[in-house]
Amino acid sequence: MTQHPSAATEPGLRRRRLLQGGTLVLLLGRQHIAHGASIVAVRLWPAEDYTRITIESDTALQATHRMIGSPPRMAVDIEGLDLNPTLRELVAKVRSTDPNIAGIRVGQNAPGVVRLVVDLKHEIKPQVFTLDPVAAYQHRLVFDLYPAHPVDPLEALIAERMRELGGAGGAGTAAAGGGSTTSDVADSLGDLIAQQIERANAMTRRPGTPMARAPAPAPAPSRPRAIDSAPTPGNVRRADPGPTDRLIIVALDPGHGGEDPGAIGPGGTYEKDVVLQIALKLRDRINNTTVGSNPMRAFLTRDADFFVPLGTRVEKARRVGADLFISIHADAFMRPEASGASVYALSERGASSTAARWLAQKENAADLVGGANVNAADALVHRALLDMSTTVQIRDSLRLGDAMLRQIGDVGRLHKRRVERANFAVLRSPDVPSVLVETAFISNPEEERKLRSDSYQNDLANALINGIQKYFSANPPLARSRQI
Image (cartoon, rainbow, N blue to C red):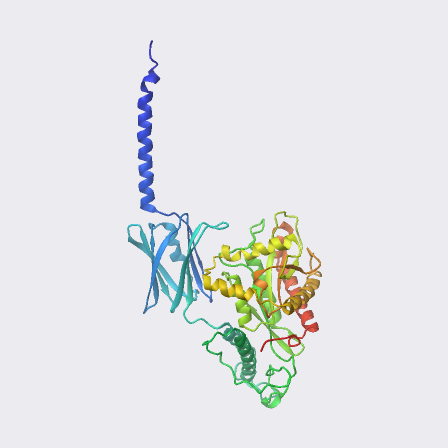
């Protein structure tokens, strides 16, 4: 029988294909060994609190680092990596305004080892850690560069207010028609805030922690009091300014930030961006508002695009002795037709609805997405704080939420006409009335457009400040129990 030509050559073809496949495997293996991990992206997040460097890759990276002094810099060796254009992008990402980093240099230190040298503007305490894939991110190698001597948020609050007062009238310039000066007012307000600082310190100070600079405490009066916010004529302060004559501090907490964009609208709008814009507008209104004779002051847990862990947000608010804590968000849902604003307070038990429970679970996962470096000790401290929430705090939070919800309903649609409740981690401050405001559904195309609108952001800020004023009208700041 005559053999078909293809049958005679088929074994040879199979051998050649097998050899070719083996060669390809060897080439791929050699390439993998040479290049190791593939860099997906590099990111830089500068902020006063800290600067974050993130290197995202398709496989986990291993790195060692050491600090070098005079001038301060950090040398980082990343193993299993060859220098590539994506890594070089870090050099150009450094801004001159970065509070912590002066520059970055990158080079191939050895085969399969890339070295980063981070030139620093001052001494820092780095935290270096890795994050497993989550949400849209693959493996992340993270460098959080914290100032070795950070600015105390309380001192920053005082300094900011003094700068404003100095700019308004000129520090040290005599006031028209009187003997007091702008510097006198600044000093008086500084004393006022300093006393509140010491009260906050007394609640949170650990043994051995130095006390904040503050004037010597006055003898305990028969009722609560604070130094007046401005000197009386002749630079003589009133002996007893009354039980509520003091500075009111409102902590504003724009949700998400940095590595955590929050919800993303169909048009590409990031939740973290719009809630920061709303918070900044609300800050301006608070800083220009008084309740009775009490001046108000806003404190932001973040004032730029950087990530803040949930526990740190609560800690910051308590550290400045905040009277209120307002977390600002923009909701998202699977269906685009969902719409309207909502206000949430803490629930020690179950959520008030399935949607509230789902939202709380989503918001509580922010630390995973944003990339918090949480060790066992931090987790224990956070858990202890969560267990301290009080019935009084929740009652006051519901009152605040109700006052704000009524005002929001005048400028836009409400998703629910009552304050919802769920177990939000960011609301678990034991001594500060706390609410979470979902300003709108960013997943709704119409509401996404409104959230991006300057006029709607102003309307929301007006509604929120009106709600705050309504709350304090019915609940004077010193009328509730306060640990001093």
